[in-house]
Amino acid sequence: MAESFDSAMATLGRQPVDLLVIDLDGFEDHGDLSAAASLVRTRMGNPVLILCPYSKTSWLPELMTAGPLTYRVSPILSSEMQQAVSHALTEPLDAAANAQQQLLDKEKELRDLLAVQRNVQRALTGMDELPLMASQVCVALCTFPGVRHAALFHMKERGNLALEAQESRNHLDIAHLLGRTDQLLQLPVHEAFPPLLSVGTGELVLMDAPEKAGDPMLAMGLHDHGVRTILSLPLRSEAGGPVLGAVSLMFDRLIHPSREQFSCFGSLAQFISFGLAMSELKHQNDALAGQLTQITTTDALTGAVNRRHGEAQLDNEIRRARRYGIPLGVIAFDIDNFRSVNDIYGYPCGDKALRTVAMTVQDRLRTSDTLVRMRGEEFLIIATHTAAIDALKLAEKLRETIANTELPGCDNVTISLGVAQAGPEEGAATLLERLDAALHRAKRAGRNCVELAMAQ
Ligand SMILES: Nc1nc2c(ncn2[C@@H]2O[C@H](COP(=O)(O)OP(=O)(O)OP(=O)(O)O)[C@@H](O)[C@H]2O)c(=O)[nH]1
Image 1 (cartoon, rainbow, N blue to C red):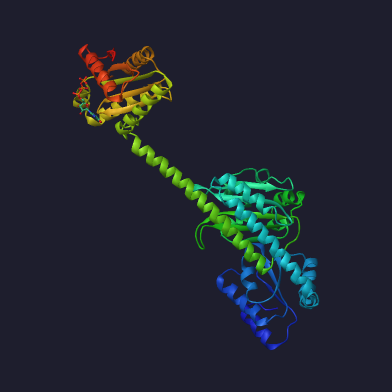
Image 2: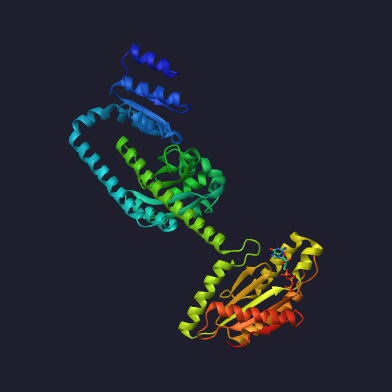
């Protein structure tokens, strides 16, 4: 027994040792990992058995680069320990005797992994919608021999880890087992359930018996579905970058991945991370494009469509109405004596009044109608599929509504309106002229009224 790496090193130097067992429980930092790797290196191929707590299984691939070793995931039963010891002592002899078979096995394992990698690659190409991509990745992961369940967990905004997709060949439903599909890091099992632990620590986790997680309910749920080993891999967009999520693979058998398998699983996780990052990027780009369209087409104060976009839309609707022979109604309106609102209550109050009027009108329109802020306190409504008579009714309803709308911090206002129906051959310019004339007549008629535009 050696209590430290130094004393182990000294003992190894003093006397021949048949089997070196390194129990990693209690070792934490990177210095400990380097010291353990030095011990493995000193053995120069002589038997080494590593007992590795499941929370530290990410150390295994690194230790494997220092020299050949066998390992078990701890905590471990004494019967299991005995088997592991005799296996570790006889493995080099077995390996020599069955060298050919071992090579064939290794080749098959790697072929299987490469096939899964190809399937995952296929799942990632051409699919930029995250839910679809994630579920295809899970389907691809289930093609690996022994995998009965695969799941992809994704970190959403503000640390909300969610189950993005799962594929099951054993009727296991992780959402049911965990009792929810989001805010998973807030679950009490976040330090016990491998994929959650992977996201928390950013490291791979290998658990070769569900009960090692120390959560009886969880262990029972997994046992009932024949889960024997869980391997979970963190997903990061780049080495050392933030954790994007994790994938978990649940096997119906005991697996102890070799160094090559760990490295293949690692590159599998890199592929998936890349797909995830690309799909996130597309999502962000779409959102930005949406915001940009919103900014370039909307009037910031009132939320109505701005004049440039409104005029383009009017042209489009005129063309459409002409092509399909459908009526197009337009209404121009202007707030009455708005100057006095500003003069009496101040410009900020005038702004609020403008916004309230625009929002009130917008609420009364159909989704197919468009409210445009043309200038100052003057607006245009493009009402598709609307003849003059219906546009007149709409205008009257709006006039009445605004007159009865309370405004924040100032007296009610009224609006004057001009209404027209686009002529069969009429362009936007003459239509707007006719409307303008109608609006002026409404103002001259004493305001707070509706005037129909003269026929073309
Ligand atoms: N608060 C505020 N006022 C605006 C805005 N745009 C234009 N106005 C004001 O709207 C008023 C328009 O005045 P006028 O064109 O004389 O029309 P009016 O006082 O509404 O009178 P009539 O249209 O003839 O009934 C001016 O005082 C502008 O300063 C704005 O974005 N915010």
